[in-house]
Length: 212
Image 1 (tube, rainbow, N blue to C red):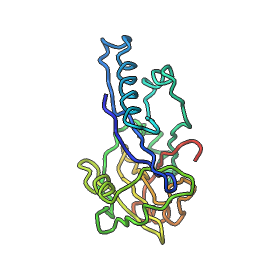
Image 2: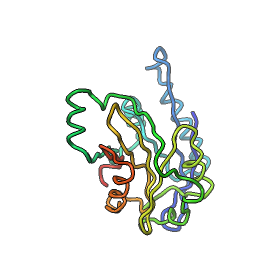
Image 3: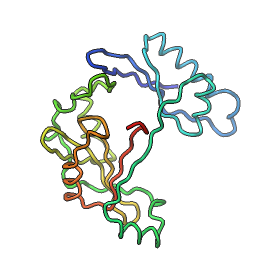
Image 4: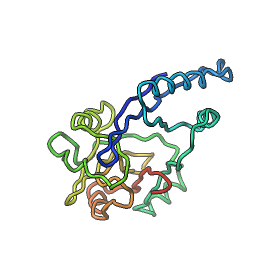
């Protein structure tokens, strides 16, 4: 079972963390404890390496296995949406179940690149919060070199926001991916207004924990 090793930062403290990567067990082999055994071995190895914390984002199928092994469940991850064009969304909801359509990516109007990505802004953090220690090389690899997704970038004063854009059926959706001030309530209304003017989506979507 593979584990992703990373450094988290809390103020000036560096915390060594491990995250289990995707794992699958063939249907005919389920119920034999294979998932649990792999997870126990991986956990033991991470602790031997000096891990301070081990975390994951399990699917509903694997969540039960983690809880049986004594893992703690933290606040749920929720998707929040803002309907920017209610009439369009209502009509498409009535005629076509647009939300069941696959997400077809589009090229954003302002593409992110190494020149407009302000690395210094991404080091801002709320005091006492725990974040992934982001190197300039990692940010460039994660946001500029993705072979499948072209990310967009907008900036207002001292904040940058990364997003992706696409369609579900005829509904244009902007998904907010990351922003420099970290917390959901820190999103500047000017950023949302700017992204509305730029991409003109029917829906703006964002994923966050249920405690904001």
